[in-house]
Image (cartoon, rainbow, N blue to C red; front, side, top):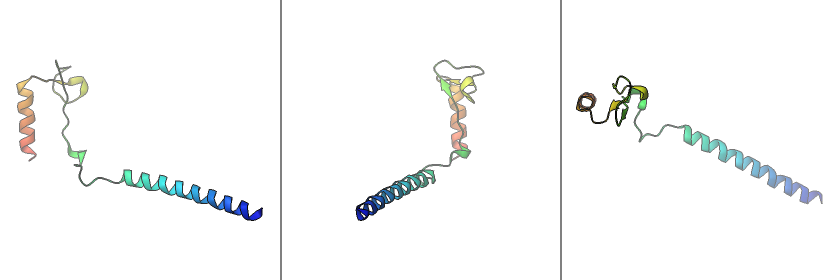
Length: 84
């Protein structure tokens, strides 16, 4: 009887430790940076919409540029070429 309880307790401890290990190793893997992804801290983000919003500069969602505005796309092209 005591032997069966020790075996059951050992299994429970093993499963708890195993699940804890899986949980923490999964968190550590997802928290590490991916070498294949670019560093987005220096990214230039611009917003567009079908008709434009606010000042239409594209600098925020509330000021989204008009998607068909050629001046906006010229500016994007210039910024892209500067960062090559």
